[in-house]
Image (cartoon, rainbow, N blue to C red; front, top):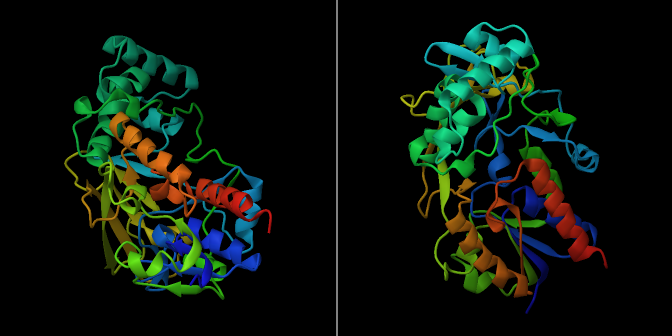
Length: 370
């Protein structure tokens, strides 16, 4: 007996958008979520009056006007501009690499001087055919930027030394010869005032949602309740790892309430030396320009090895994993029962705006005739 038109597995951005649009089309939808809360990795909760990003910093940015307008239905966004600071030992640098960074590194003032310095370092390195990530990065930006701002951070992120990582991981390193610390080039950028969870709450209003419900564990009772499944979990897990397991990197978050008003003066500070085990510290109150709370909340972010049972964050899109994913994608293409979406379903890292685009495309394709 099919009680629902759609079973949506995962109450993150992709699943919530599909559920919202399907309900608008008069479809009966059930959403199941294995976590004890909705909103997936964009989940925010209030701690000490501050909106805390529980699964790492999520900064909304897009150049797609349709996507920006779509999100305005659910929240008002502030004017937050992502301008992270990189800390190497006791030195501070602006990110992305720009004229402020180059001035702090070498004392150069003009773009011409900065270009000359980078070109000089690239010539000195003499790398024409990079054999690994280290050589690739040095061939792009020279040794100083690599040593201070790329090497340690990348090694922590990937859990391997840079000279053992393949060169294709870094295809380009954005270098800007302007005094502009805006990390993204996108036309629209901001943080929803009051956090992200409210957005998903509004999308799922009036839709049946079961929390603490793991589809993979309760598959026998769930997979036949609907005509179709929208699955936002790992595609290999859905097909019971029949070709093998896809690889990911995971993250561990350490959140702390501090008895001070302002800990680091910026929402995001990256720690680029290898000896510091975390990659960044997020001070959440700065996302909403909070200057009044007497306390502050910080989160240290530690990359770690992924094993089953841990949350998969970043797909390791090397040749081996991409070939394995293709095998799963081929069965999925012939499977009329299920549609895969999101970063785990598609085994690909997506910014939020790309997830929204994907979800709206999926809605159009699946529901346009209704």
